[in-house]
Amino acid sequence: LCPTHLKFLAFDGLVNVFQHRDATQRYKKIDIVGVVPMCYRVSTLEQRENLDALQRQFKHLVWTPIPERTIWDEASREQRPVTTYAPGSEAVTHAWEFVDRLEGVFNGKS
Image (cartoon, rainbow, N blue to C red):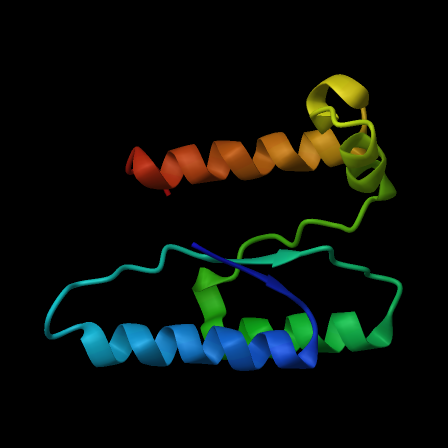
């Protein structure tokens, strides 16, 4: 699983991960089950364009972006998990959707 930000330099790192995987495939099979865009800001043109580019390059591997939420920083500052700091927040909803999808991958449902 490859989490990534939707910034230019993050793409370079992601491409390097795939190149490294491809170079080692003959020695050890490495599966990449998904690319997860993190801290997505739909309000910025750069982030929308970068998400489009990510989806063009990695197609079905790109998961639903996880939006940027300040609640993560606030919970971190309070040294609490976001699930107890703000249990009804959209951030928690997105986090559980991510966990459900990840469980589905490892249980053979996705």
